[in-house]
Length: 245
Image 1 (cartoon, rainbow, N blue to C red):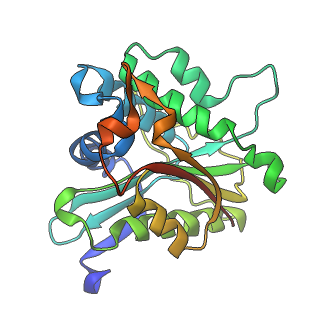
Image 2: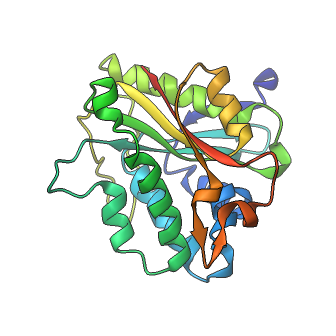
């Protein structure tokens, strides 16, 4: 983009810290559910969600935007490979939630679990592997430049490469190991929970299916509705979206 100033590439060891920095400076501060569960009011909660980003990174399918003039990571899509679990197995997010030590980070993960549970994407689309765009963020001073849109488009492109049997996963060294998780899983669908009008419009522009709308009036944290904390006439619901690869 922008005559080569912004480039999009797979997350790597070289860009991992920059990608986490985007999550700290943007997602944790301004993402609607982070606001609703008062994530930054509880010391340690954001660090717990950084661990969730690291777990996702191990799948080797996350994407970053880099300003080539400064080599700074300015946007990230932390993506997770999801496989169906049988009735006796807990999902990836359910297992993570059980180990959360902080109320706000657990509330955010439980929100994702609840929205996901309302539509079984595996059965709806007859697929057995999904690439989920888990956390999407752009540095605030790089907003309104279509970087978020291009991160989603790049995630779709990466998914198509995997479906074409191209081994484009990038191993990431996490806690001393660079073993790729879900290394042989081939996604045939991309999904996301779009929590703001901005991300929802990206999904519509890129022709995602709109499967479910959930009002922020339905959720409470510490006795207050999500909609009250978000306090916006513009961002009043989240939307579950998906697109076949």
